[in-house]
Image (tube, rainbow, N blue to C red; front, side):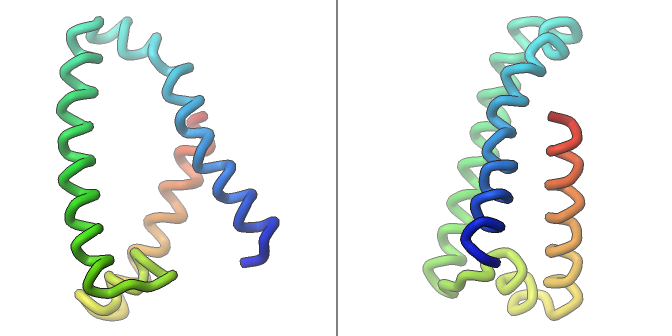
Length: 98
């Protein structure tokens, strides 16, 4: 990707933070402050576990391709292909939700 394409996709992904703040009313209406508090703590803990696992993999196999390359090396080319497409679909869904 070129510089502008890389900036554009990064800017789109960062806007998830803005979408999070605009979606608070859904959590307040359905679960209230308790659900938000425990949800943030629980999901935050799982995010830390995933980050530690990815950090361990990155230290063993540093690459610019990251998820796709790791999936291909650890599980085979089909896993790399699925990882790439699921990541793209997820990014489109998150952008549409925001």
